Image (tube, rainbow, N blue to C red; front, side):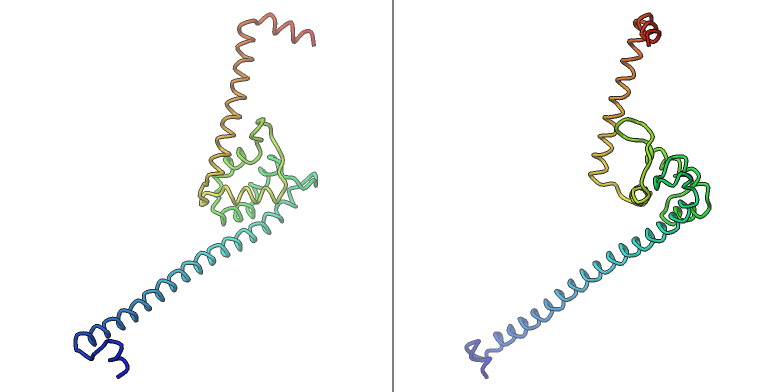
Length: 187
């Protein structure tokens, strides 16, 4: 009877609306609960994918460490382009990189990107941890982000500057061949 006081009188229309309101609250509660479960499931699946990825990277690092120790002839802890080529020939390294999605046909592209210094175009050596980080970042399944695009733009500008400088030097040699010969013979 206390419910009747809330609605003024126990008229059929008002009492019916009360039960509609209760039904609305129950359905809304289930919808919110359903959304929360959906968000939780999505978060669990993202975390599981990240953890699986970390597990694969850890296993690859372990396998590549064993291969690297076998091919590191100078023992400096750095990977050179030559050592990478030797590592690429090892079946264990190929299997490890394949588990990351890096196929043998990608090795040459990796070699060109990893061991050429973007600022001056010279060959460089990488620390092993940096090498693993770059290989994992540059694997085919990884999406590019804004920082990757910014790095690409910088590399393109640096390459363009080197090409322009080389073309100017070449133009100077073609334009005044005798001065370039005198300069070289004077050294």
